[in-house]
View 1 (cartoon, one colour):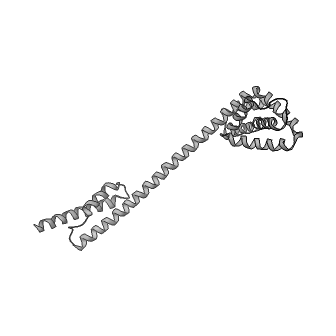
View 2 (tube, helix red, strand yellow; view 1 turned 30 degrees about the horizontal axis):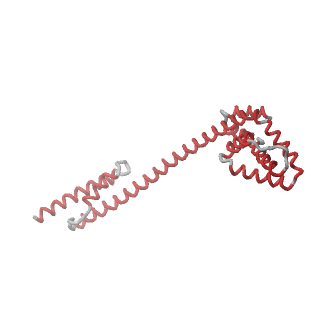
View 3 (tube, one colour; view 1 turned 135 degrees about the vertical axis):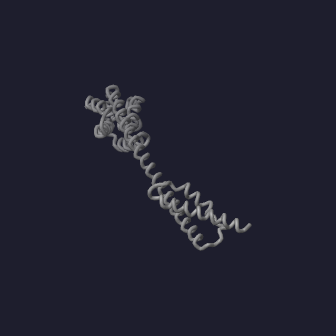
Length: 225
C-alpha cells in the first residue's frame, strides 16, 4: 500500500488532472489526521501508560490536511471532536485506538517522502488550475471591456447622429445661430467617432453640417457689423 502510494505520487508530479485526483484520493486515505486526533483523545481519556500525541505525528497530520484543504484547522477540530466523542463514551475503544495510533506513528518515516511527493503533485495541479482560471478571467475581463467600449461608442454615435440631425433642422429653419452649441459639439463628434465603413456616412454628414453652421455664423457676424 505504501509503495503504491509513493509511486502514484511520483507519477502525479507530471500528471494529468485525473492522476492528480487519484493522488488526492491517496492523501485522503492516509491515517495521520485521524491518528493525531485519536492520540490526543487517548491521552485525555484512556489512562495510557505513556503519551501518544507527538510532534512527529502532528507534523504528518498537518501535511496531510494542508495538502487536501489548505487550512488544517477545521479538519483537525472535526477529527478531534469525533475522536473525543468516541473514546469519552466507550473505554473499550481505547485499545484499538492505541494500536491504530501506534501503527500510524510507526509508518511516519516510510511515508514522509511519499506525502511530500503527493503534496508536490497536488500543489502543481492547483497551480495549473489557478493558471487556467486566471487565463479565463483575463479573457472575460477583455471581453467585458470590449462590450463596455462598444456600448460607449454606440452611445456616442447615437448622440452625434441626434446632434447632426438637430443642427440640420436649425439650418433648414433659417433661425439665428448666435447661441448654438453645435460649433463645439460637432467637432467633438468628429474626434470621438472612429472612421469605419459603418460611421463614414455620419462623419461626412457631420463635417458638411459643421461647415454650413460655420458659414452661417460667419455670415451672421458680418451682417451684424
